[in-house]
Amino acid sequence: MKKFDLYKCDVCANLIEVLKDSDNIISCCNQPMTLVTPQKSEDGKHTPVVSETKNGYKVMIGEVAEHAMNEIHYMEMIELTVDDKVYKRYLSLTDDATVYFFVAKGDVVSARAYCNIHGLFTSEQIEE
Image 1 (spheres, rainbow, N blue to C red):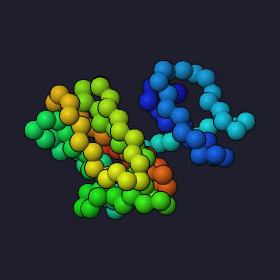
Image 2 (image 1 turned 90 degrees about the vertical axis):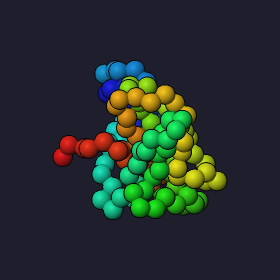
Image 3 (image 1 turned 45 degrees about the horizontal axis):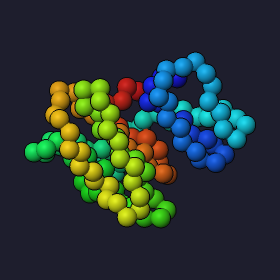
């Protein structure tokens, strides 16, 4: 497993993020956790869209309209990476699925987001 990988427990739905590269197996509820792999949002509803602002970056989840935030279906986390520096915002149901990050601008910028139902999505091109 590598740094910043996400793992999910298939029993209780706990999420774990790896902070240090390791060969260890992560387990929860007495079984190995499943690696959460980034996926493409075929309809664009879960795509993290990054745009530059005067004071940093805006990340909106959804190419056309902002992702809904309700008790059943919501974004749990939005993450921005700028030149290998990672900034993260955890969301609650009262938050919007658009986050402003007031950070220094960089050359390499990407985002990823986690939906409680559909999983992990990234702004980067995913190899198939």
